Image 1: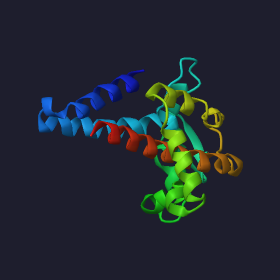
Image 2: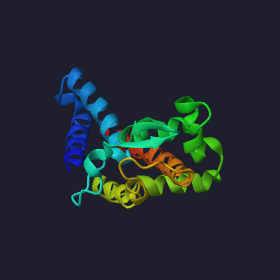
Image 3: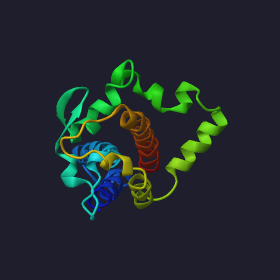
Length: 172
């Protein structure tokens, strides 16, 4: 709920930017971008039933090396799996860029992802994350898991981008 509250507070500043200093508006913009990204990152989602196991801050074996599982979701799952890393990542994520869907279907999907409230977005995200919580401390991330994690991470980035665009378009 803290992220939801903060996004609503900062978008309120953006909507009423004439009432705030340039520094406050700049901070609000930075925080909205940061928080919308964070709420779509599996290692930043918290559940009251504790399935997130303390932000996934435990070690697993990934590509033959011991690494903190949280960090895999912050960067590795996305960057390591795609040629060009973060520079070309938008191409892999967005059907409006890569042409994996017709323009009509890509716009329909974008509108579908953007609809609803921030709370609705959180419920949508939470409903997609079950595979993230399968690896236990010390386990090895398997090729089969990576085949699920890659598309899931790509989808979360796409959702974050579309939703951020919707918030900014409505706020500025």
